[in-house]
Image (cartoon, rainbow, N blue to C red; front, top):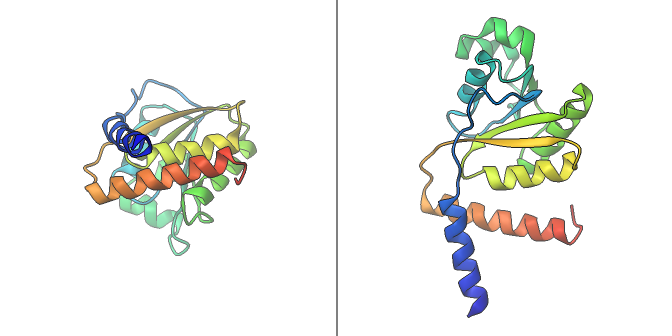
Length: 171
């Protein structure tokens, strides 16, 4: 019964602490946007226009998408030419973290802003923080959404499983 109560309390806490977007004035070296839901790339571009970072990585871009296509879609040709990198290797949250960690190391960044949906932020931060290590400051900038109950329920369990796996050294 205690385990069930802890599980319910944990889910309630997960649900109630989804987080809010950060102030664009908060500067970081880089911004990482994980693809997958509406509003994420828009948020990253808004932050770039606010000079919140030097560069932005969009991780998890479909292999068939070309930079000029996204630039046209978002009407941001100049910004995409100078300051936006696209990552095509990632297919899930773990590989987003791997792709991002490599990008952060390549650019020698010390501070990174992670942009993803509010319900996805805990697990995305967990994965990325694990790979970046303690020397890199990682700040979450969740995009507000209205997730369905089943989305939250599933994401909570994915978060629990990955937390346990990382604690046990099965990274």
